Image 1 (tube, helix red, strand yellow):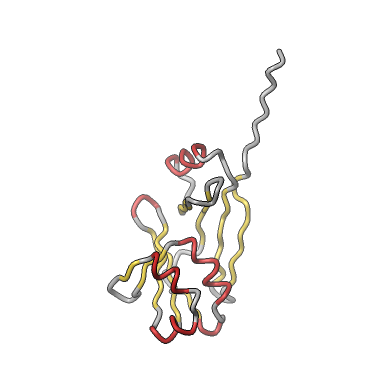
Image 2 (cartoon, helix red, strand yellow):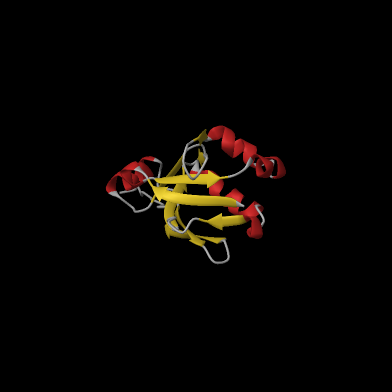
Length: 138
């Protein structure tokens, strides 16, 4: 059984943790990339991986082999930069988060919600991309 948890870290940033056995890593080959980019930790969960891997993990692992920790946070905000190189996530739209959003030319900010009962994700636009049109003909 693979267990996942999203918890609050420093500066209101989400931390994605996963508990997975070696047998399950061999069964789900696509997880190796996430584990390589993450780091091994001690405690109830054995890996901390980047949050951008949450959607592929939840969508591609069998629902009967996946569980969400009961203390896990179930909602967060996310956005990518224009070229999808950098990923930003936060639980609330703080001033610092919105400043980064403006510096990245105001892309769409999505609100991700996790339903713990049926292990599904919903993704909706929380803040739309700002389009500015400046007319210089005065």
